[in-house]
Image 1 (cartoon, rainbow over the protein chains, first blue to last red):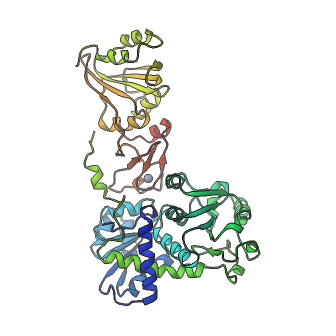
Image 2: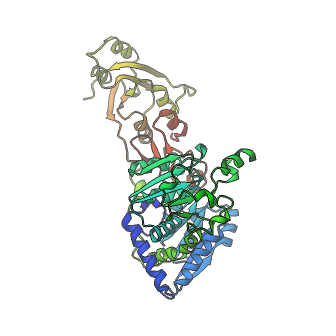
Image 3: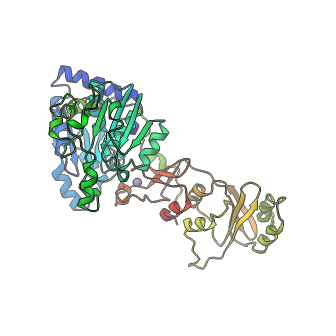
Length: 321
Length: 176
Ligand SMILES: [Zn+2]
C-alpha cells in the first residue's frame, strides 16, 4: 500500500512524478472540497511553524481541517509517555498524521504503530521528504529534472533537506556538485546510498569553479552551533555566502533555491536577480503537500510499497536468548 | 557423525599444509563442554571475545589460537570457550565479523552440533545504535534493527552505519 511517507529513499522516479503531476494539477484547478470532512493531525514535537502552517494550508485548501496536536503532545511527553503510545492515541483522532520529531528514525518507528497514513515532516538530522518533493517540484517547473547540473552548498552534514534531496535526485539524470567545508561534508550513511544508487556526485570546498556549470544552486544555512567557537564559525560560514555579484559568472538561467528561513547565506540583493526562486519554492510547498495529502487520504496509498514495511514482519523469526 | 574426535577433525580439514604442529597443540586444549569457534579471520579472536562479552572476568576458561595457518583463510584464529554455548543472537553478531566461521558445540567431548555461521539479512536486538539521537536510543518499545550490508550494518531507523571492522561492532554489541 505504501501509505506512509518516511524517507526520500522510498521514492522511485514514478512515485515522484506521480506526486508532482498531481501537485501541478491541483495548483491549476485549486479545488476546495476534495477532502471535505477529513481531519489531519499535526504532531510537532519540535517547533517548525512554517512546515506546520504549510500542511495546515494544504489540508484546508482540500476542504479538510487540521488538529494541532502540539499541546497534547507536550503534556504527554513531559509525563514521560513514549512516542509510540502518543501516536497510537493521536491516530485515533485523525485520518492522517504529520509528524515532526527531534529523534532520527522517529517517523519510521511511529509508522509501525499506526494504521492511518503518516507523513514525516522531519526527524532530527534524518529525513524531510516533503521538503524534497517541493524542491523537486520547483526544479522541474523551472529547469526540468533531467540533464541537470545542481550545486548543493552549505551544511551537508546536518542538513536533512540536503540528504533527502540528494538521494531523490539519483532517480534523475543529474550531476550533483556538493559544496561544503571539509567538516560539514555529507555523512557516511548518505554517501553510501548515493554510491549504491550510482549517483554522479562531485565534492568541492569552493563554489567558484563549478558555478558556471550549474542550472540550480541550492543553498543551505551553516549554523552557529556546529562550531566550537564564534571566530571559526564566522570564518567558515562567510565563505559559503552568496550575493548578486558572486553570481556574475552563473548561467543566465541559473535558479537559486533555499529551504528558508535564510539568515545571511543569501544576501538580499539576490532577491532582485532573475535567479531567485526561494519564495516560489516555499509557496510550492502547499501544492505539493496538497497532492500528498490527497493521495494519502484517497485510500490508494501515496506510493507503491517498498522498503518501509512493518517491523513486526522482521521480528517473527527472531530467537530470544 | 558425532565421534569423539570430531572437534579435532575440523582442524584436520585445514592440515596438509604448512605444519602439523598446531593440530597437536589444539588437541591438548580439547574441551569437554563448550564451544569451538573455528575459521575466524586471523587476528580477530580478541574482537570475537569482545563481541561475546568474554573478558575472563567471569572465570571462563578460554583457549585462543591466533594466526594458525589455514587452507581456507590463509591465517585463521581458533577459540575454545569452555562451558558456554552460543545463542542464536551471538551467532548473528559473530557472522558479521567472521562470516566464514564454523561453530562446534561440544558436550562430553563430543561435537553435539556443528554449523557454519549464516549472515542474516537483518539483525534485531543484538546491536545497539551508536547514534545518541536515534529513536532506538530512548525508551521507545522498539528493537534496534540493522540491515546487514556487504560491509557493516545499518540502523533501519536512523541510517547510521556501523563498520564491518570488529572494534565498531564489539563496542555496540548488546547480547547475553
Ligand atoms: Zn539508529
